[in-house]
Image 1: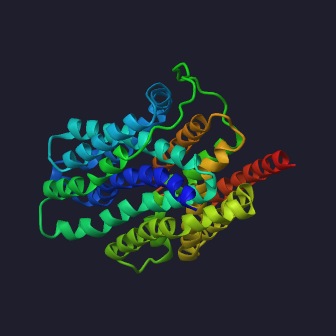
Image 2: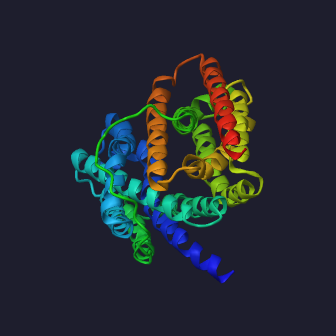
Length: 377
């Protein structure tokens, strides 16, 4: 028992480090679209500022993997934790668009390092499903804290001070990074940006992130307006924010149970079932049953997300490489999905578009499940 607890410490340290780093980013997403002018950001730049970190991660994940293989995990994670605090402190300083874009790029790099580090340390734990679930739950606690205290701080201080306070609250992430011990390194890989055709699982990860993290998150307000035409813009905004908060609460509470279920009943079974339930939620949300559909999607997407690393690395010798590649496809899906969602804000055929996406998701899930179960035979 004591051995298991000791082994769980490192995944928890890495997860707490990422959780604290996410605080500034979480508040920025809720703050910037409404209050951009208070930090001298023109409205036209909002989308770029909020998405550039995702595109940065897509491009630099191979380089980050190479850094891990050369320098180990502990030092890059410590540096990333420090950079994330500095970037958060700079968000509200009003240094200008160029500086803000640079800070978002630096934060995106830091996030990639911390995320791959947290997942890899969790994968070192014997009960991988449980470790991944607990890790995801810890990671969500920081953003939830920021979403709770950020609005309260906004009532008593100006934006530059808000982000400085959040940065100070993020400092414990550096402490947890310093508590990490180095793990065994894999052999250094030659650095390259070679892109190979994705596996079935990574195609599934891309499309799932495209549909949920990208398109659906952007289109929540549009779906709510179509379902509740009598609601005011304030009510729609509050409802959309409530669903995003619900999404993180689900991740906090459900992820450990999802990990336990995967260890008990089989990772491929739980992962595949979660995708099918997500598909049902997408169909409901875009066919008039918006509230139940969104609840179903966000509940089971958190199950799906918490188990993705375990499913991606199943049967792989180099866990870190498999996790990094999967993270790249998820980042790409969410980034391009968000762009697509922006173009579809006034589209009248969302139900048809999401139906097509769910059919492809169901097909890929069937192919993935067949392959996963064949490996167990």
